[in-house]
Length: 136
Image (cartoon, rainbow, N blue to C red; front, side, top):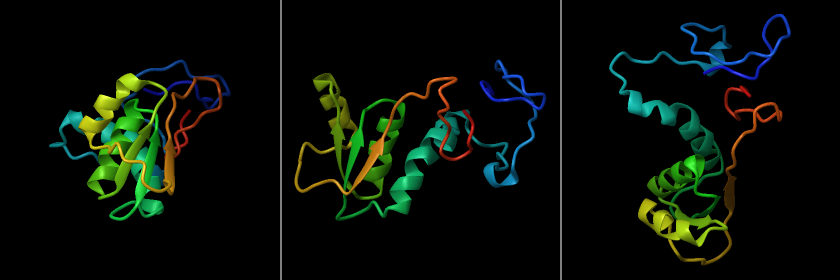
């Protein structure tokens, strides 16, 4: 869905499901016809959390803290854990503790996290942008 961006004539787009768009080739990939639609979250939200984990060397011997256990936070826990890092979820909600542990987070607070992924909801019109593709 494309929305809340300036169109060619300067008006703000109101959303839709385009069959084609004009985009910078650095930010697109060819989707294999055999790709399961369930993989869609990994193509945007997944790369949003994977990129900084990879860039900052998350893996064995590293301790990653994920702030918030929403959509991005839950992917952050799973990806950081899969990379071999010890993962702590920091949340204001005690009710998320069980879910965080089920996703692979540890209850341990050994040492200080060296990498923190901040997750929050982007607000249309706020200027928030996707860190990968630049869409608002």
